[in-house]
Image (tube, rainbow, N blue to C red; front, side, top):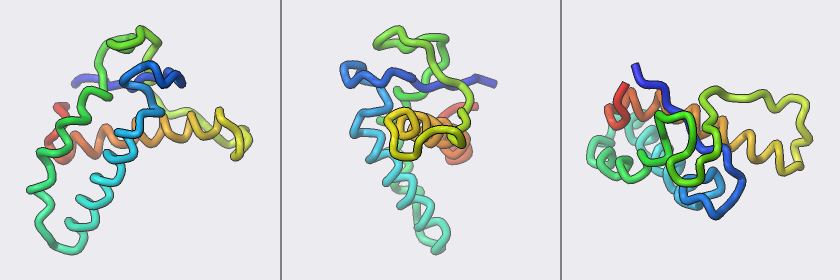
Length: 111
């Protein structure tokens, strides 16, 4: 079983950083797929569109783009200021990590 991580870099200069606007589109696509599936509709036609986001999920120790260490497990946010940058960054990182098993269950990301 492959362990996947995501780049922790807060820097926009990293093409795989959490701040990439592409990740917003990934989350929206996952929401649409889930909504269609729950409504009994066809979501399979949307699955190929998820493949363009697989580069954000890496299996090395460091980011292939910026060499920052990857995050492999979600982090607590309870003691962080909900209005602070660290909270937003950690929450975004956790959301992306939480997408890994979803993508695996959809058959898009290998186990």
